[in-house]
View 1 (cartoon, helix red, strand yellow):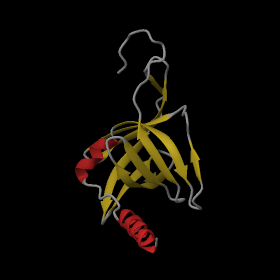
View 2 (tube, rainbow, N blue to C red):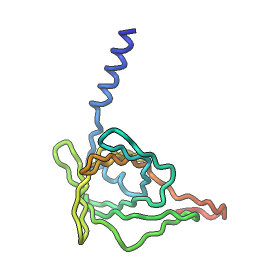
View 3 (cartoon, rainbow, N blue to C red):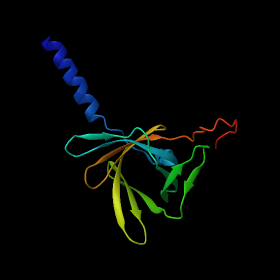
View 4 (cartoon, one colour):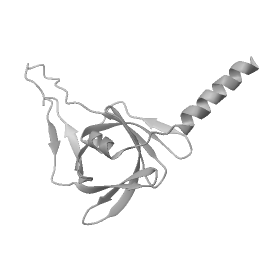
Length: 147
């Protein structure tokens, strides 16, 4: 019994210590539509999102680009307004930061992990935003292909 507990503890410690190293080529994975699945607060509590009215859209090239809020539509398209945030990707030692700026504000978030399908970003209040890659949906069943 004790042996199993020690094995489980070792595996947990190993997984925690193996934080993903984000390479410059991983930044291209940011591009596209992202939906927040869960927010984990600094006290450990979390809030899950079953359905979101807004997604985050990233368009990054050469470590610069934009993030904007978009609203998915039933026909598979996205609505957006003219508002967006400029983004610069900054590598600092073992960390990757997303520096945002608009005409009115500047702030930074840390990119904790990124894959083709999932992303975790932490803000300055230690809230972790867990995203999943979003794809257009077509609920109209009109046979048209979504883009």
